[in-house]
Length: 238
Image 1 (tube, rainbow, N blue to C red):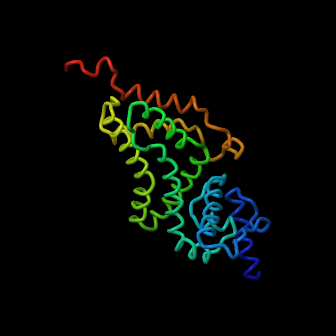
Image 2: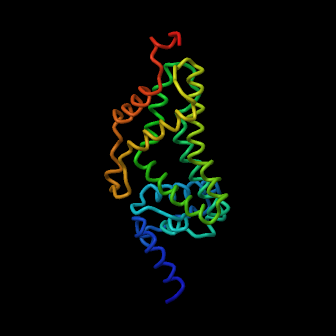
């Protein structure tokens, strides 16, 4: 068997395992002549989509990259290597999730921003991408414990801290919340994750269905019912 045939066989098997299109019939255009940022963005989007659409889960970034017919050389050129690619994927996903958590300047901002954050967390494609990145992070942590800690801080740790900061600022803006802000953030994330109802066997069609706004609103209401101090009790003597 020639080297080219062997490589093609690996690409096809990797793609089928991940539930992706056959890379030999859908080759990735390399945007010849484009500037490096355009090529970087194009490759990033291809890999991010592959993570979102993987039906059987992914445990290493190399298999995902192989599934969209990319080479080690391209990843090294555009991201400095697979570690840089994983960092970029985590940073982009987390930035999208926490973007609604801007500074809470008034009580009126609180529930709409918290609900918008909940929608980002419970978005089906975001959930699948997060779970696949989590598996990849576990694989990298097995190889390097320090790398595992770094990815936790970059991903779940940043989400938790961003939500905690938002809750603290909301309290300072007049929202009556009872409890330490990091504990509150952890509780809110547990409610959202526990209500997602999504698993890896869901088809792409099922994933594409919009998460009902009412479901996110119920989670937010459940969270507030446990941590928000009623107005009529706020100034009662202890």
